[in-house]
Structure formats: structure tokens, C-alpha cells
Image (cartoon, rainbow, N blue to C red; front, top):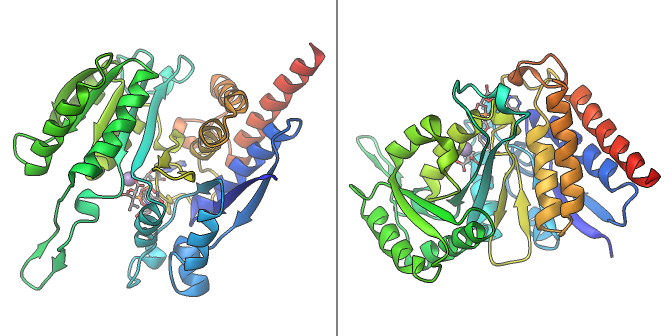
Length: 354
Ligand code: NAD
Ligand code: IPM
Ligand code: MN
């Protein structure tokens, strides 16, 4: 049976970069034994337009019945005044699929170094493990009144433990270091995180643990990003720090992510939004979506070989300076995608000749 992938095309630049990602998926799997079947489902603003609801139940069911979900960015000014915004659908799908851990890599290869806005830069390779289905995003009560408004930041022990386990296990397969980023000099939830992480660290003697306040972490991501291996943090801090971390690669438009939980289905999406300011111009950077496809092939389907072919092809495009304007180039989305596909095909032909 072919692998089942549910595709949620997204809004504004969403469909533009999803098209690129699917073209690359087709190219890299063409001469391989990887078979897949794609189902597009309505989601986000597109679903509000079609059925009046950002996350229809049929889409949840479709995702649950698939082996992986590919999602492009949603939201934008068209739906900002809707009673239920596309962003609510995004939070709801993460909750419905119980995707409590969100992995957001920051990798600056030698080829990428010159695109970094940092003057002093060496190769960087760390991941942010962001808790995704709790914290202030989901805490109750929340209310907006005439004279006040409030949100609630709440974490249970189990919610912290399950994402911490993922962070430690990732560190064991990497550089054996976890940095917990929190605000434990102020927040009760952060103190709780520190206690639990400190306790769990005893089970992972091969992993070094350190602790960093979120304000200092924001500074260190700029001053010395190479010091990090796995950054573990709660939902809102992870949202903010991952955009900051993305920018040191040169553009927010390069970074993919994986969201997973205990179940079999994981979801892959760029970390950025729908970029309404550049939608329709054909200049969105497709790397975030192409890299999300690679992350999916490796993690949901065990096809590291295909993921590496994609990563190599992207790196070759970067080295040849075939990049979109956000990275200082003047190539269009489709031209960059074509270059990546040509690189994949060239390597494929070279392999067959051997
Ligand atoms: P954004 O991430 O869409 O854009 C921020 C800046 O980065 C913009 O200048 C944009 O042009 C640029 N950018 C982002 N992706 C790019 C790419 N692939 N190529 C080139 N440039 C790129 O953030 P925003 O403008 O604050 O939000 C726009 C909408 O997206 C909002 O409705 C927001 O809620 C939504 N959003 C959705 C997601 C998601 O679906 N996961 C994530 C973040 C924001
Ligand atoms: C992200 C986005 C979302 C988040 C928004 C759109 C709800 O910023 O995926 O990073 O805050 O999680
Ligand atoms: Mn974000």
C-alpha cells in the first residue's frame, strides 16, 4: 500500500511553496521504490472560504488516517476579523493530533554561512524542541473584557515530562547537550519545568544539561549560537526564539519543522507564516517547504537516503547562489525549485552510471 500523505496547502504563499515541495517530492522519489498517495484537504483560510470553518472534522479524520501530514502556512489579513481565525485551526489540529513536540532545526552549513546576517559566524547546528500543545496558548481561563484581559500559563507534570523525554533522546543522537530555556527567576511554571527536567536528567547521564533564562538565550543565539545542541522550551518562548534562530541562517524562509506526539502521524511545516506581503509575486523562498519534505521522508518514512539527496540539492542551489530575494538573490520560486530538481536528477543519473 502506498504511503498516505495529507496535504494542507495553506494561504497566501502557502500554495506557492507547497507546489515546490510536492514537485521536489515527485522528483526525488521518481526512480525509487517509495510510493505515495496524496490527498489535499481544506484547512485554514481556504477552509473558512469553502466551508466556513478553519479545521473541518473531515480534515481531522483525513489527517488521522494518513501516515504524515504536510502543511504550508495559513492565515492573513483576509481572515483577521473572522470569529474563528485560521490560526485557531492551526492550534486545533496540533491538539487534535496530540502533536506535543515541535522540532525546529537551525543549521548553518558552510554554503549558508555567507547568507547569515551575523558578522562572526561558524557552522551552527542546533534544534529547538518547543512544547506545542499546552502553556499560555491553551491555558484556561482566558478572557478579554472592557477593562482587563487575561491568559493563563499552566503546565502539568506529564506535559513537561513527555516533551522533555523527546529532547533528551534527540540529544543522545546528537551532541549530548540539552539547554532548558525558561524564566524560572519569575514564573512558577518555569520553576516547575526546572525541577522536572533536573529530576529526569538523572536518567540520561550521557547528556549534559544546562539552564538559561529566556532573555539571555535570545542574546546567546546571536552572540554564540554554536554553543547550543538541543534547546528545550515551553510553547511561547519556543515560538519567539525559533523565528530569531531562523534569521541567523539568512532567512525565516529556509526553516522546516516536525511536530510529533505519541501517535504515528507527524506533521511537517515551515516555521514561518503565509507572508501576505510577498504572496502572488512568485518570489517566496521554497526551501522551508522543500526541507519539510526532506524531514518527513527521514522521520516518518525512514528514508534518510532521499532526505540527504534533497538536502544536497538545496545546498548546491545555495552554493550556486540560485536563491530568492529574501536571501539576496533574484531568482523566482519556480526557478529555485527547478534548480533543486535538476541537482537531484543529476546526482540520480550519476548514481545509476556507477
Ligand atoms: P510571516 O512569517 O508570514 O512573515 C514574516 C516576514 O518573513 C515577512 O516579511 C515575509 O515576507 C517573510 N517570509 C516568511 N516566509 C518567507 C518565505 N518562505 N520566503 C520569503 N520570505 C518569507 O509572519 P507574519 O507576517 O507575522 O504573519 C502572516 C500570517 O501568517 C499571519 O496571519 C500569521 O498569523 C500567520 N502565521 C502562520 C504560521 C503557520 O501557518 N504555521 C506561522 C506564523 C505566522
Ligand atoms: C508558528 C506560528 C503559530 C504559533 C501561530 C500562527 C498560531 O507562529 O507556527 O510558529 O504561534 O504557533
Ligand atoms: Mn511562530
